[in-house]
Image (tube, rainbow, N blue to C red):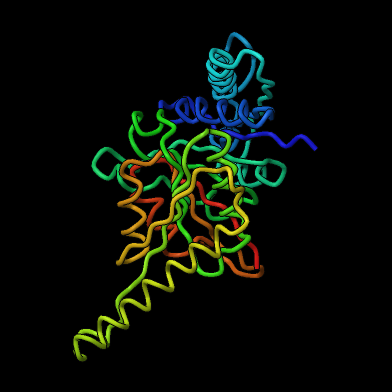
Length: 287
């Protein structure tokens, strides 16, 4: 089954950057590109009709936006297969629904306003938290999102054979970039007041455990892939945000638990989505 790469389009500069990234992903994977514009215009416009075409004004605008986005995708990838969809749905609902038949969803990052631009937009956050496939949110500046850079993988507990590891390895291989697996570790709290030698031994054990977790996580990664392992002391979110400063893509897993409501991201994925300096891929992991 040919699953497409889906990109959310709304005419903003951020979404056009997402079109560029999604077109590249689709071309690398030999997949089609599906552009989706979703809005509840029918609820708010009612009978407001564009006089010259007899259609809702926002539907006309959406068609113009999709046409421009399609031309942009074909500019660098003329052979790319592109389909478009204009949905009269709430954007996050529509995109989550599209993710059930996609191999990847790509979204621009729109902060709430210029003052709080570090905060992730609600649509991107909701889709990343509920999508059925990996979601790439284009955090960072245009310079960060344009360069391939290395792929950084945040290694969680029990990461061996995880979907996030497979996705990160595939992404690095497709782009011909190194894969850097990162595992954070914490110094035991009781080591602060204990004997210096005992405290040092406990910290060494934690660091060694992190190194072993990296080895275990990457055991099935193809040997030909340029891969590096890195352990760092600190909170996982802070360690990964630091690693994102000069990365091309940061990959984290998000465990989905059936029967649970709310944002199914986890604290680390939620944190890096808000603060990372490069695009972030959130890969769903199922129990």
